[in-house]
Length: 230
Image 1 (cartoon, one colour):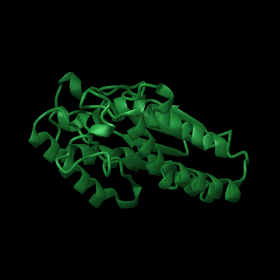
Image 2 (tube, rainbow, N blue to C red):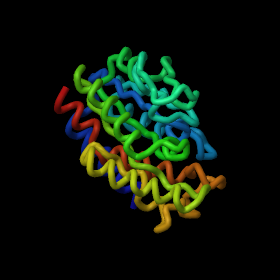
Image 3 (spheres, rainbow, N blue to C red):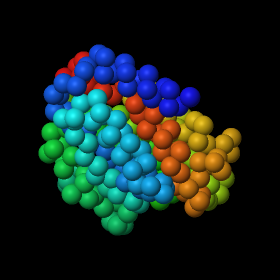
Image 4 (tube, rainbow, N blue to C red):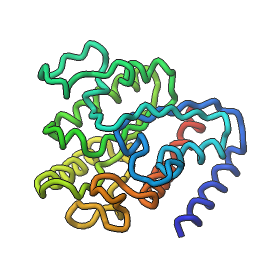
């Protein structure tokens, strides 16, 4: 069924857009899941699958993946940002932050920070505020932004998973149609990774799960939005 949906979407996009020369740029900012952790075959990571998909629609589209394992939204804050503490966990990475991203002149940015902010003790309000800053800076220069929900997590206590669920609720309230669902189906009712989608460490998602994440990103219609609204 998932394969059939993928074919239908691919056919729709290629019918509408053909294989033109758009030269679009999409930048991925995120942590280990976006970097590719979890799948046994790195080609199955959601970003790599999504890159293959968009380049099959238009070979001139470039996807730049600046994600790095363990990173949080604070790492993405603009150069000169004054953090709430001198602790290293708040330190900005000027080689991967929003300033560096915008230097690439992207058409779109996808943010995938599913669990690390909460795991580091940051509040939902902090993560939302950081997202708003990134989105505001991007919009001022005409760059569109999408972001993902939290992802399920089997490691840690129930309170941690409760906060992930709270984050999802708040993200939906704040960002609505910009939100890509990386939670439904791969998470059980307790917020843990469903066994069939667990890579084996209780933290990262399997090859099959990354296929779902890629499909959800495709279904969001980012390409059609960019091509219809350059």
